[in-house]
Length: 465
Ligand SMILES: Cc1cc2nc3c(=O)[nH]c(=O)nc-3n(C[C@H](O)[C@H](O)[C@H](O)COP(=O)(O)OP(=O)(O)OC[C@H]3O[C@@H](n4cnc5c(N)ncnc54)[C@H](O)[C@@H]3O)c2cc1C
Image 1 (cartoon, helix red, strand yellow):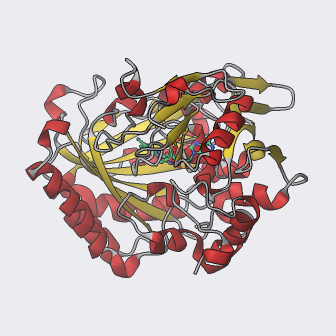
Image 2: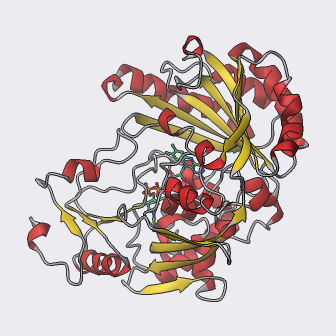
Image 3: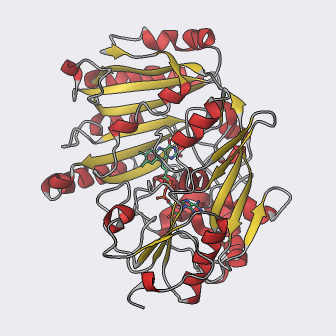
């Protein structure tokens, strides 16, 4: 089979993009520019029937399958060498039912699409903090974001999913329908089928919220983190915060004199009345001597895209991540000592504050397991494509050494933050023994031949050893 374009994919009405097609290089590119794979074909699906046709076509011919949602996964699992990419990137429709407060979202939508449509009704669900991240991969891994402490993880808001299985059959998964599959989809990644649509619960949010970052000089990092530990401990569920340690990004809203200056930021989003938010962040804004304070009433939909330009498509990225046992003085010292050692001004570390509604669901409620940790960290090495070589190697080493230093303080990991060099033991680590075993059993039911393995793979139970 040298030319898939010449082959009729039975029942398929979308585009088949093969090498030589004018869109081929764009279509195989993913967010992480370091990932350069050459599939035999990218089959761009228009609807669920296309997805089913593509799965059956690839299966019948024993072709590798990669599934592309938003194409954002740092490990680049949305694209494979030699096989076919089931590309959902044109399946981005979002339809909101403002009475039921639900949104039906196609499997290739981005969070920016969801925020735009839901905020037209003053509603939202927990999504990622960067608008060009895909709903598909983020949801299937768990989904953490500004609203999670108030409204739960993205998977806690998932009501049902339409799934094309490894057999090419279309099923619905919910608490009533294929409940084992529904449990596994809520954190188990792309192991169980291709999700053509998700239905989420929505909540009133904004449209204006109190949100934005406050920056302090890097030298203040230890003090800021010790203060932040107390703030986070006593924070109401409405207050979502993310720490960013690196250089100040060159955003137009920030004084150019501060661009690229090493700094720590505490970014917030208050999911409640702005006046209550003002009270919740008052101490934060008055702590020490901020370099710049951008906290203020903001449209939620704008806040959700405020970071988009700081992590553009095409740069080269390498990630290391872990959940943390807490924010002890020792951990704070490690974070303060390593965060500013990167060579590239584009590299940074980020820490999410979890807890709240995330922690109130039992650990086995969904496949996502890390409900009992309050903080995680992602070490995000980033450099320009032309800096591959010395800078790329230095950044990768920085991220690995940073994680190594945190070794005694690790408490699991969020599966969506794993990179391509994180081995299967880290996938196991993401779920813990009990949830991992249960996932392997569900995998054996729905995908016993491990057709969907270009992901953070969980082999089916019989072969899991
Ligand atoms: C800049 C940036 C910011 C991020 N911020 C957050 C954040 O705030 N919160 C958070 O939780 N995560 C965040 N992430 C991590 C994110 O959750 C993962 O990268 C996730 O994999 C992205 O989903 P995607 O659909 O874009 O990925 P893709 O690369 O398209 O897909 C990754 C994998 O997910 C599976 N998949 C995707 N869509 C489907 C589908 N419809 N059906 C079946 N399988 C599918 C496939 O196995 C695929 O290999 C961020 C990532 C980036 C790069």
